[in-house]
Length: 538
Image (cartoon, rainbow, N blue to C red; front, side, top):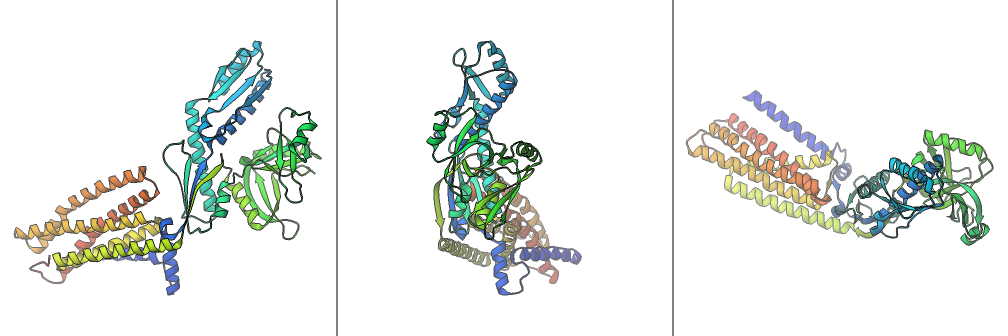
């Protein structure tokens, strides 16, 4: 018996020490203790203060990009198949509601090539529906199932890209989630605890960082009209005019570029900020993937002496002359500061957004609100705990002390679990902790009432305790399992705060089974082993 009790006390002591280490660490001073506590207990936006952003994803951008890729692919295949055409273009999508109305228009397919053209589209463009307009013209519309998939894929990729950007900034406690269930809303909720000035963060999140390298066909021109006028008002086939920003000594203007880029942002392997040759000037260096490096090397070798435009988010940053063959590296100069160069590298490394994001709502929660929430939540929990303890002591007398110790240990385990899991504590989480206190007391009430019943039928103290705990155990497990199932549904279908409530409650319930059954029974057994007890203070 004593050997069994010793093992149980070692388990309880080890659990307490592990929990205390998770919460406080190994501080050597009171200041370090406070720092460890602040570091280990992550507070959410509603407690710590910070920024709350609602971003709308412009899904129409992804649809137009998909159409552009399909057009380039179709042109290549038609050329290989010897099928001529007069023109090929797509419609412009002005709003989010028009996203799935994307359309590719093909004009001037020769009548004798109709069968070959239809076979080619049917075999290689299975995501699109081909419809004849007349004898020589056709239109292609994206299949409804593919449109739905593209919407969800765009939202998911945007979320992951924003998460990578936020994590790279060291804001690991932040969260990004879809707001609402309908893809038509295309809204993302971004919460940034501890960020009081979201201007830089918002600018980083909005920047698509769509890096592309284009062959320069002509320019620069002072105005767009000048570029058009030089070519008789009609741009050469497979070219486009792109605006150049005034940067790094380069004047504002326009360049005539090839329609398709030589290198895309997806071809980047890494990027980092570095100091340029001129003191105080910063630049962003990037490294290409192996496949892209091979293509870039071939292009630069055959275009020495020509210009190459570096285009970021649809604007020409610079158009340097290719001096020699370049393999796998490049650089973007002209950053105003180290932070600007580092931000660009971060965006390039995190990946390009598949569509623009537009802020719809922005709120800053001040730390005073967070402190008020913490204080009021703490007071509510403390008052509830004191009231419960007093009620247990008044009604169950000595056994109430046992229940109080189990209750305190339950709270310690719960907080330690949140620390070890790096979970974020929010107001709904505090509500879950308070509800856990009630569930823990309920478990003790079930056990104590069952022990009382056993004592009333004349059983001895030891026999009544054994029977009371064993018979109440199944009831406790049953009530806890049903609550855990409810929490599982809350976690699966709820939003962030609801998920926090569910997680906190589940951790508390698991801890409660340990404290109410194992710890409480061990304390009773220890009391019985110390002296012969004829009656039980319960």
